[in-house]
Amino acid sequence: MEIDLIYLWVDGNDPKWQAKKRAFTGVVSDNSETNNKGRYISNDELRYALRSVEKHAPWIRRIFIVTDDQQPAWLNTNHPRIQLVSHKDIMPPEALPCFNSTVIEYFLYRIPNLSEHFLFANDDMFFNADLTPHFFFGEEGYPIVRLKRKLFGRWHARLTALFKGLMGQQLGQYAQKLADSARTVEKKFGVYYSGVPHHNIDAFLKSDYRNAVEDVFADRIKKSQSHHIRTFGDIHRSAFSYYALAIDHGHLKYVDRREASRILVYKHDFMAYISRYRPKLFCLNDNQRVTDDDRKKIKPFLESLFPDKSAFEK
Image (cartoon, rainbow, N blue to C red; front, side, top):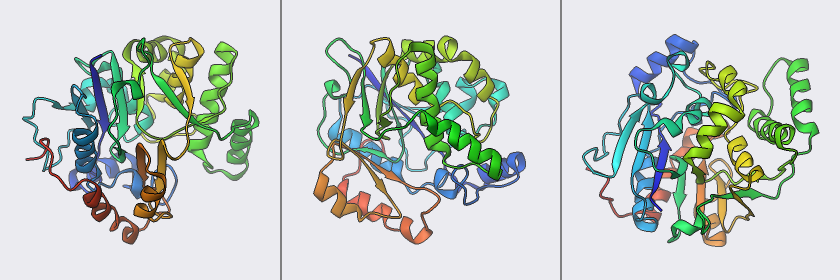
């Protein structure tokens, strides 16, 4: 199998990007779940994510970095396995400019020359063990869909929507999106997947991803693609994984923290967590609860795990 890897990356510290976002949305960031500083700020995670690729997954064919015409200053753009992809090259005009990663993800399959088998990651997701392609794809090539055994009842999306209506604000939007994705797949295919996605590097087939966007969920995609910032009701890409399972084009695997960990920047002792669970994959999750002092711990921790400069750096 030829397997490519896609990252989304944004430099929220860039004054030009900040001016664009402020002009379009009225604010750069706030302390909400959907528009907090942690969604846009760069803590140099991508540098270390690429070091983790080189160290633990050297079989990756090509690495696509999807950006809003930005470029990390340290990135070796002449490396044959690195390719920058602009939003405008894969997204419809009505979706631009886009500050909504959920919507950007709808159009990943449009990346020119993307392989049929591909992995998708945010820049805060890391390989932490030597892995093979079959960690992500079965023998016949179908992706392995990793879920955690946390249950979303069918009431969750309706209750969250009720809270939103009563209180006039977005409550638990990410959780609502996951529950909504599961309920949408249940309506179409008669099966409800209640596990929570592992919030780490995911595997997909390009052909099934395309079918999900252009056919199966086309009505929801069309409704959401003009949402330039995260909006209540946007369908989440987890629906694409549930869809793959529903048509028997995926392998369901429930995982624990030793396989895929989500480390909360504001809460966990990074090294103690890694030493205890030794996860094969981990995400270093920044969010609205994280302070700038918390963020100061990120780069030293990543440098200690991945100290060797990769070929992807200048």
